[in-house]
Image 1 (cartoon, rainbow, N blue to C red):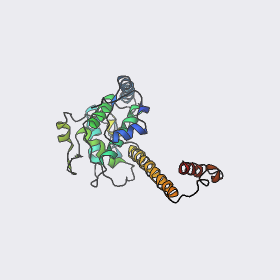
Image 2: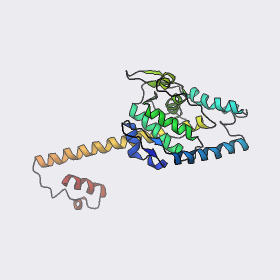
Image 3: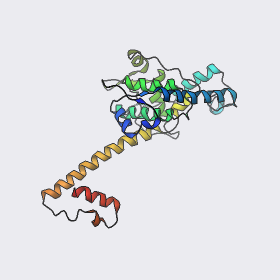
Image 4: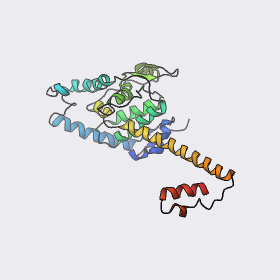
Length: 258
């Protein structure tokens, strides 16, 4: 098996690498990048300890936002955020789609703004390397963005929920972790909220759809060109000058001509 590439910057997780991860590639977080991520985490946690209450992190949520949480309660609260929002069901996203979502989430974490630990980034790469695919609902996102889908996607990291099995069904995430030699990840301050934030799902699925669209476009262009060649039509009309300034049409015409 080829050695997994070590990421030295978040930008290393570009669309091409994310698509490779979706197809089965796995990656590592390089030592220098892990150190920078951990430094950002340390600054964020120091601010949480010495600063005012932070909604959903050092306090409860909604009607319980006035309730202060102890350090132990803050940790269990982050886990409960994932468990309490994983309310979807089948049909599930495919393996490639879920792996792409995990890769996009990893990229956002490695920028440092989320204030999460390097350990959770390593845990995400371990999940990818082990081939563990969370069971993520394919249904549309609700009014709170992708919270339901992301709770299903990242709950298994902490041993919550279910993952896809080879028979097309699901099984408990804790069983899959144990068989892979992994332990459920213990979420630190803010890490549950960080896993649920943003729209990595829309980003990941868009990247995969873009690649599929590119392949389809290439096939359609080839089919059209073969049809032109089959009827022995003149190629003179298929020049960019015939597009009369339309750059997109000009590109298409030149591809057909070529």
